Length: 225
Image 1 (cartoon, rainbow, N blue to C red):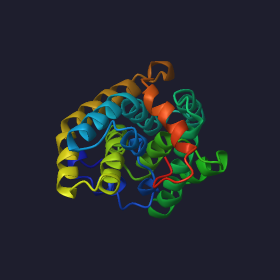
Image 2 (image 1 turned 135 degrees about the vertical axis):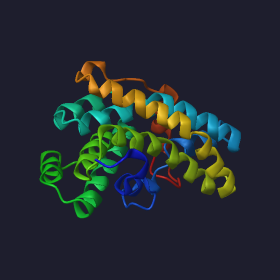
Image 3 (image 1 turned 90 degrees about the horizontal axis):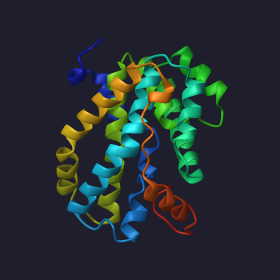
């Protein structure tokens, strides 16, 4: 395997321009902006840090477990149980379906075809991330890193539109989280290596879940979730 820091496949998977559908989702920050919880770079960083250490860790561990070869159907059930909000469940499956669609073109692999057939309605995004990482020749730690990064890059990018945030400030927020992203990815990969679904992190963010249900009912919104 290539080194984590130099893998072109990892860079491609984490690239916001990879057509996995993430541009249409705000990671919950649109609701946070309307509620007044996020209004500038400092509050955005706090929001992202909280998201990273809760749902980010849970998602990264699921992705790493999928990349270790754990049964994706069992992992999909685990992801479902760790996502109380119906709106977020639906969003996760849409993102997983779009990720698989893009990845099957980029890294054709029978395992991805099998997953798409097994769950035609879409698998949860973290599980798809793990299988895609394997198809791309990446390691479980790579899958965890890409997933952890995705949980914060989406909200940061969304705030450029939602707040008119200076893109330089937005990237400074993301840059300031790199050490935390690495730490979360390391913890997630270590948990996945234990090989026990029951020992995978199950941290949640109740306010994100509640806000997601409110957001889904808005007649007008910029982002799907």
